[in-house]
Length: 103
Picture 1 (tube, rainbow, N blue to C red):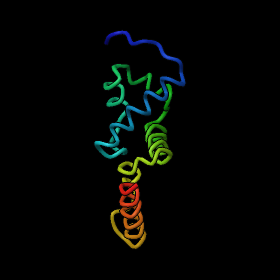
Picture 2 (spheres, one colour):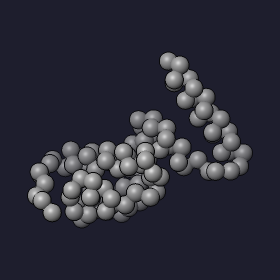
Picture 3 (tube, rainbow, N blue to C red):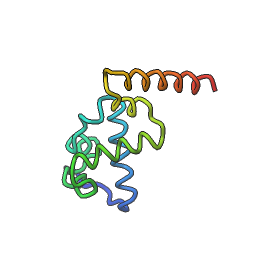
Picture 4 (cartoon, one colour):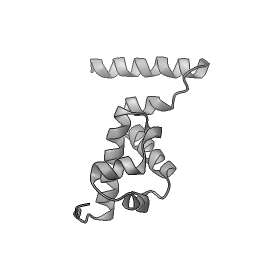
């Protein structure tokens, strides 16, 4: 593995999160692994673990970032597939998307 530029901890953490968020847009955020993120950034998996000790920490941080920045395709991944609650949430999500597209 080639040597990677040393970054400030806050910068590296943000880089990891943004990379993982990009992956979550393409596949379910629950399918992201530290190895996937490490490969994408060309760093070792232990570096990812330094910032996110468990995979759950990484996935939760990615989801929280998606919520904070209204990344709907990732936020929608946690809506249950069936039931009254999911039907209401999906309806509201569709309305939100329609409203945001008309602005």
